[in-house]
Image 1 (tube, rainbow, N blue to C red):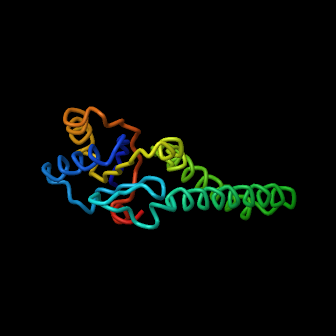
Image 2 (cartoon, helix red, strand yellow):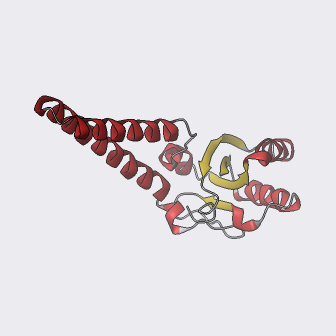
Length: 169
């Protein structure tokens, strides 16, 4: 799993300097993504994928969460009906499904998540968001580098991203 670090910059010059600092630290340019509101010139910055611009990570997460809840409550209804009818095999299977959906939901709820909708106010002020995908072991190092070399950068949090999707989502 990769971690996606979020940093806000007040202008393009500061964001470009941060990108250069990251490249000097051997961060691949494909692991850096920039985003702002439409109309803000991001020339010279690494672009974000269309899925990032549409916040597809959040949409996928919401869809999977709704599906997980639907399966859980369907299994709960089946559990109650099977207990009433005395079908204990079906009751056991429903209980197993409920435990599995609960465990899956709990696992993903404990993962840090940042939604782009939280940056709406910053985008209205023409601020630039840099998203940097790094292995978990490099998080502290990258945060320290950007903090030391770019005092105008505002750390906005950390999210997880699957390593196979880190360049696209």
